[in-house]
Image (tube, helix red, strand yellow):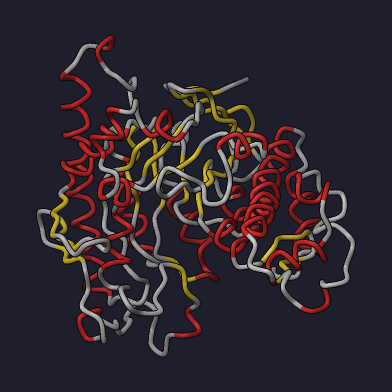
Length: 416
């Protein structure tokens, strides 16, 4: 029997675990979960068309609030009928809050920092890390965090902008996505514990303000005058890899009346599973959970097992454009010399357009010749691989054999 609250219902659970298969209903259609969400940063999934995205099995696309705010502008997107209509995508859409750009334009700007790292690179207690502050680097950071919001310079023309939680929600309402996120601050896991605590408290205050602004906008017009329907707002849980902070954030965000939850970085790669489990053991079960910015196959299995319903990540498409392709035995770099005379498909048995029609040798030739078709075919394959891997996970939950699928896949997958 289905368990339901609002627009999300749970069809079946993984026995003894947090994982589940469900259905999330939106104004533009339902999403069968767990599901992978391709990233269309600027209202386009790079290299492929919306028709191709749909043909790959994608159910929902995520666009970037920061980039669309700067270009072409959220008001123009609103005039176009919302981000989905603007890009020719008829299915459900999501927009992030712009909070990740606080990280990428601030602490991480001009540095080799990521929100997911290996703790092997740290030389101190992981709870007492020595931060590498952005303002000590070679490049001035483009974003500065204050109590009320974030000031930043456009990476396009250097113009100055200021985003508050209220402004982020207004922009996202203009963009018209079915699911939007509260404004948050994403920090590097290498930040010291003191700053992690300060940032977390700020994220919680911003979450409350985001929710209040969302309610204000949603209640200001009657249902028949809301251009994009009733949009769902997800609150974001932060807290890094620190168990106390993660649990505190899950408790506070979970106590607010959000429609669902986002689980944000920062993580240490090897204990991401623990951090996700800490959060999902606390969050309300009957609401959907989205793991932000995670998309590697082994991490998808981890997330689904620990109760994640949605994932988004740029890696499948970014890897594709760089010639890195997913297979059931690990990733391959199609530009390597050994593939120049390999006339087999990227993945035997794969039903994507690239594998059904072209060889590794041909795609390797395209990359070496710097042809646009190289990125197109590689993107088609990588997204098909990831989207359908998650689809297999969903089916295995419904058929009570998720653990069998997980073990069989990861045994073959060399990167695990």
